Structure formats: structure tokens, C-alpha cells
Length: 299
Image 1 (cartoon, rainbow, N blue to C red):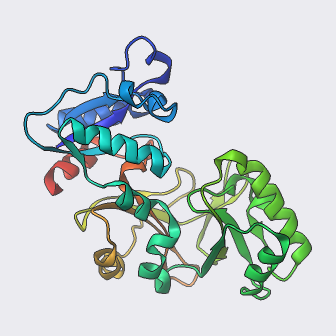
Image 2: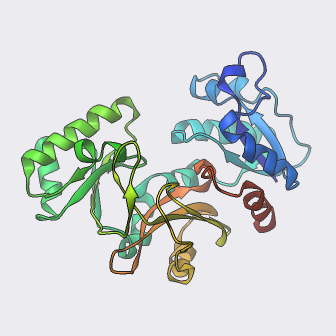
């Protein structure tokens, strides 16, 4: 099993054998665990220079499986990476369709709809359509995001809508959200029912309210590791009830994915998001040695 990391952008012109500094600790841990590590040029991939992307990755004599670990990228670039690696006899754990399944909300929504906040989405950004979609939430609080990202650190200006029936506020916040996302908007906007979650603290910089959320990493339907989602606030050593999510995890059509979960104020649990495991970064206080040892054990 190979782990394919992004190179360092600042060094890529000279020698893209140097791993991106943000992934150095994980790169070292993967090697120490006995996994083979490779580095490719993320910059050349997204610039369209596919031939130079894998310059320093050699062909394998027989088929070898791999896991990409690096920056989040759009499915079209991931597909190019997947296909180029195949030419070198390296098959990533997910093809482009499987990557998009974990990456974009609508693909997996029906699998988790009963355990996730009610959501709807659209490509039609007209005021009439936005009003129609938000009508489904009555006068409940909602948040606006897109398939992958939100503007949660601009909580009051571009994320949280206190009353979905307040259409002036809806249009104002959606407009600001689209303004901030700009060219980085992933596919469609999403409206999601706001859940009353157990409070941790206010973020030290953005002041957005942080709640008791966790990230569970699954590989081949086995739990690899559980991380606190936030690095601020006191979790009191609490971890989510894995048994509660076990049946749902088995329904997910992905071999390597993350499940972001949260504790409700009433003590229950809820799924917030799914994601492709290849583009999920470890928190600074995460144990990368244990993580990659678990990856090796569960492949």
C-alpha cells in the first residue's frame, strides 16, 4: 500500500520530492509504520500539466494499491490523478465516482437522511428559488453552505440564519456567502436545518459558537481513529457512541471515509457530514503514528 502525498509548492519548481510541510508529520508517520510513501505535484495537477504531475513516481511492475492524502481537489482533477497513477500500475482506493460520492453531499444524503439534519440544495441561485427552498424550513433556524465548505467563521454574516421565514435576512446572508465563496464554490448551495448542539466555547478568533463535534475515520468499514473536531474547548475526554453509528457506516458506499458527528444538547447524537477519507487532515493534536499504524492494519 502506497500513500501519495502532495509536494511542497515552494519547492516544486526545483524538486517536487519534498512533501508539503503541512503533511510532513503524517508523511514521517506513514513511513515509520511501514507504508510506502510517494510525492506528486499538486500544483502541476491543478494547473493542467498532467504529464509533469507524477514526474518522480516510478512505474510498479505489478498493480499496487494507494491512498491519496493531500489537499481537497475538485473531482475533475482527482480523476486525472487517478488515471495517471493507473498508467503507473497504482490504483487509488477510490476512483473519481467514489471520490465524488464522499465529497458531495447529495450522493450519500439518502444513506444518512434519518440521522442528519434536514437539508436541500440547488444550482439555481435566483431569489425566487432560494425563497422556495427556505420555505421548507418554516421559521426554523438554518445554515447556508455548499457541497463541501461553509463560511462558518463568518457565522453571523454568511452562515447562520436565525429565522428561515425572514426572507430579507435569507437573501442578505446567501448573497454574502456567495460573495465570499466566489470561484471556490463547490457545485451548489445547501440549506441545512440548524441543530441545537452541546456548546463548547466561542472560537478564539472568529467567535463562532463551537459545539461538541467529532470526526470518525472509517477504512473498510472499521474505525481507524476518532478525533475531536475542534482544538478549542473542553471535551472532558468524551467520545461518541460508536454503536449508534455502526449500522449507518455499513450502508455507506465508500471504503475510506470520514463521518463528522455531534452531540445534541438533549444528549442524543447526530451525523453532520460525510467526507472522502483521502482529503481529511488530521488535527494538530492527533496521533499520526497511531493513525497510520491503524491504516496499515485495516487495509
